[in-house]
Amino acid sequence: MNEKVKDIKNKFESDLKNVKNTKELNELRVEYLGKKGYIQKLNPLIKDLSNEEKKEFGKSLNDIKNFISKELEELKMKLDKKELEEKLVSEKIDTSLPATKFSKGSIHPLTKVRREIEEIFISMGYDVVEGPEVEFDLYNFEKLNLPKNHPARDMQDTFYVNDEVLLRTHTSPVQVRTLEKSEGDIRIICPGKTYRRDSDDPTHSHQFTQVEGLVVSKDVSLSHLKGTLEEFAKKMFGDSVKVRFRPNYFPFTEPSIEVDISCFKCKGEGCSFCSKTGFIEILGAGMVHPNVLKMSGYDPEVYRGFAFGMGIERVAMIRHEINDIRDFYTNDIRFLNQFNRKGGLEDEA
Ligand code: DAH
Image 1 (tube, rainbow, N blue to C red):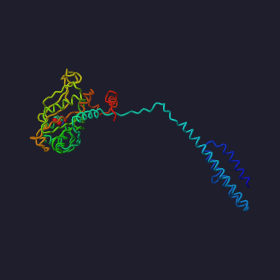
Image 2: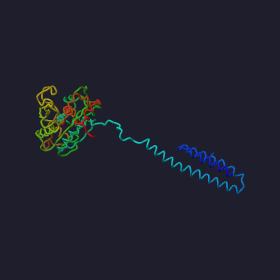
Image 3: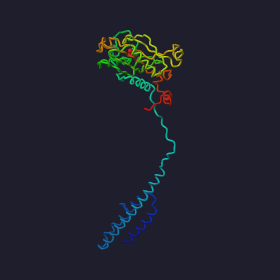
Image 4: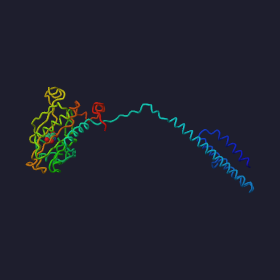
């Protein structure tokens, strides 16, 4: 009987020598120790043996089982190690290979210019506030001294949601919201999107961006407004820029002015960019109309204010010689990439 065990042992030893990988090793384990394996097949033989022989046979079965398990385990460890080493070699990363390139996004030119404008005013002590883009007629027009049916409403073709609600046509309603919330001195700017019904062309867009400014105090005057805007223009466009103030009309300011800067291309000589005038208009401004102050709870006998509103697209177009306002919105990657160059508008997000 022990002969059978011996045969299995011999066969196992020679089979084991031929095992080349863990897969073959597992197959061998099943072949010998599995439910239908060689060892199990010997079990039924026990019943025909004498007690003495049973004992002996049982022992040798156990021994061979332990022997096979141990041998398999030892070989498994060796094979695992070998296979891991092979894997490490075959999957080695070659760090000298060129890296996969991926394109990096860049800050949109309008965002970049908006941030520059914010920085300038923050350095002059202004707070940056925001207001809603979907606005009440009350704030967009009425409380800015533009009652219903006022002819000046026609200057701002409006997207109405209903009779009382609209897409704000300018950032000026934030003046009203700020006045209503405040007491005493105010010094804010408000950047944001604005909307007007327009046929889009190189200089018009139905959506655009403005920055509103409002300063309220007991002793502000037009000369403060002038000084502030001159300082802004110098920081934004350079020290040599000339600033020109022209009278204008806005219902929410009195007096009202329009502000131009000298053309950066011809330095005020007159060229095709500035329509031979030597100047380019950048914003509207004025002293806050007493009615506006009064409607929002400020006593115009005590408080005075100045306000201004500029188009960010306009500033960006002048700064970067962009000829078509639609370029800001059509997201042509070739346009946007120009602001990604070193020395251009490059910035980390
Ligand atoms: N809201 C005006 C517009 O969009 C611009 C403007 C003019 C704003 C004069 C002001 C201001 O705050 O004082 O045309």
